[in-house]
Image 1 (cartoon, one colour):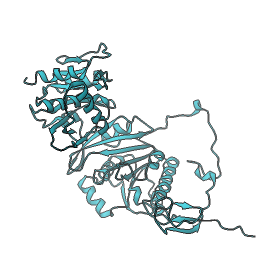
Image 2 (image 1 turned 90 degrees about the vertical axis):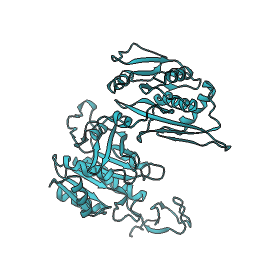
Image 3 (image 1 turned 90 degrees about the horizontal axis):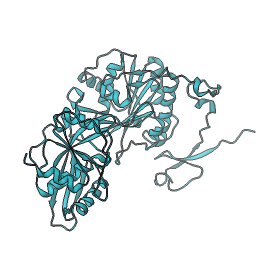
Length: 461
């Protein structure tokens, strides 16, 4: 007697499956979208084994016997991208690049294809643009290598067929939300499709050693659409930060199995593509106004790289009962905490004023070392007195107004001296004997009241 076929109910909107029928999909909330389909049989366990043919089980190996010498890195042609990747693209890795539409993801992928083509063939599969559109962008970016192959396709099976035919060393899929797998009832971009297509690309990368780059869109919350399942599956997650109106782009690693997640790469969008910014401190401080209250310089450590950035603050009295608060480039909740500390410990009334805080250049600072510079910028705006232009300020602020020591003092001092900064204001708590570059004056303070007095008393210099 033939076995009865098992059926499930699949949602035509989100692709979710259910063992029984519902009028309303439990996953997406849409009505009358569950349709009965034949359940997909579970694949054999051996088919999930990465790099092994079906029917061959993986054999455990002792830790000392495992060699890591075959980890081959390829330079991408962009030093800033290599820095974020941890030294270059690793053979057999799956890298996800996300960002806002128009931020430069596709431009970056096509731009590095010219350099990666020197290591082998590059297959660029786009589900959003035609080959003619890709060719026009390639001409603008001066990508002329005959080892770069362009494919306009949305079917995963056709993309894998092209990989089998061209045998590339690098595969670029732009974007993963447009790729679909035949047999899956879900629409392209659905969670089920994204998960299945990404898993197939992961098996391809691990079994063949191909470097796979996949481009992912972001949702309204700024996270890669998927949602977080993509980040768990891939080896490296890179985020493009910045605004389309701003020339600078920040490439940051949110996950990296082959390197640090603290490094960033700085690029500038030009007509010829993304241009590397080897000296981001000078670029971010370019055009800084002179003698204007509410502006000061801080030094933030992005991995091993110290970066000088300008923090601006505007405190303006308001006649409305609910003052407005806005923070760009720093955490909003952290900014509100600093406002409370400033009013309670320094005696500056800001509760009845509109407050705006901005980090110039599109840079986002997450470390607490920018606390003191933010407080000083706010105090400068309240008192309407400018901070000395030749001063760099950094330090973590506690709830009692005390200043905590930060790491990387030598690197911060060296970066300030390199840009001809004459003075650094930093916490005195936990001070250690550290070499100070010649010509740099280090002023140590213990609380925010003392720091404000030091930074504003000689603003006329």
